[in-house]
Image (tube, rainbow, N blue to C red; front, side, top):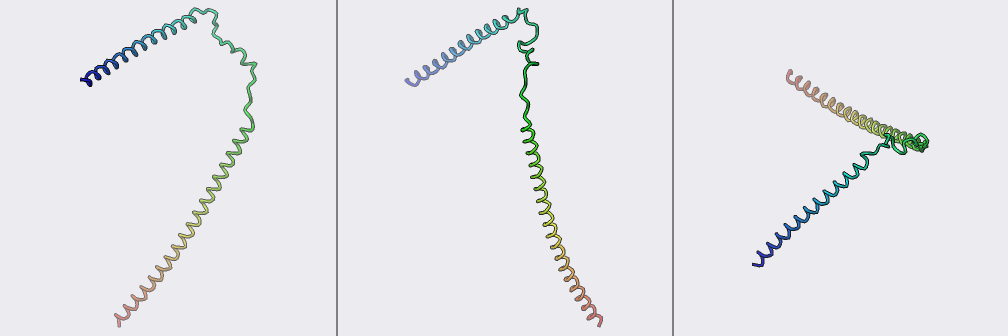
Length: 135
């Protein structure tokens, strides 16, 4: 029985909370739109507005802070350093590729020499075998 009463109480509390939130939202929404309409109507009949902003005429008098040459120099130096670093890395990669190519060429040369020796031995054996067969 206690569980039923507690469940009913919880449902009633939830429903009343939802109703209270809905009423509060509706009242705030209505008052917000009323204030917005009032603000809009405040500017609606203003005939003194000529289309210019209050401080628009002062822009020709104002001095702007020039962008520093230091920033441009720093940017230029940074770019030069980046180019130098990239060139150095490219040079390192080229040297490594040259070394790898030289090593591969040396290995190919050694392999060709081995094949030449094996082929020479095979030809000599074949020639010896043919001579023996002919005799």
